Image (cartoon, rainbow, N blue to C red; front, side, top):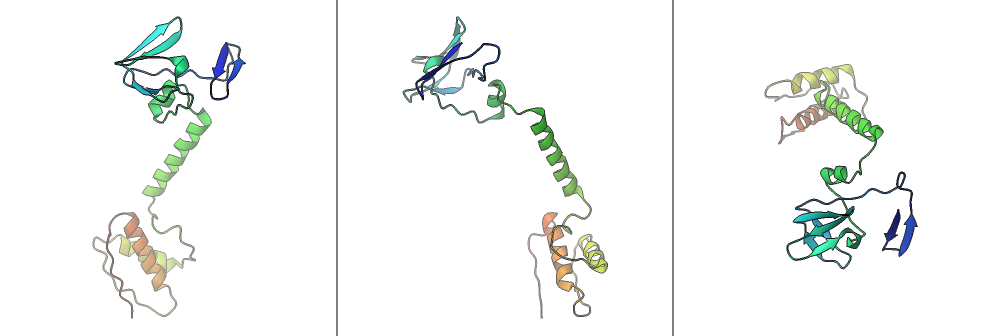
Length: 172
């Protein structure tokens, strides 16, 4: 099979069974673009001896005159054009979504991610307060035991779980 690449003016010859090309077939309702820049809305696709001609309301466009810079955006377009990823990419995306879902359901959501060294009582206080129906608390203990960290953990958890949109913090 011989293929002309109009953008470079080059003609290449490929074996039919292993050509590194995929044929795009547009459907009725698609908008196609010609080399000369005009756009046509396809109302009919004619197949004459294996060559497609796209028919619009007022003109016809043989597939050889399609614009050479066609972009396929939607998943359905990519699927019908035969442009899809292999199984490894799909498995990676699926695994990523599973891990994101598990992280969102985690009982420690909102308590992880900060670059802090937690003291066990801080996590306990944050968990207790964040699980309250209306978390209104006064954090007070000895100096240096991590009230700021506790407050930030509580706020982070409430924001991530969409249980708070406004917060009032009062400090001396």
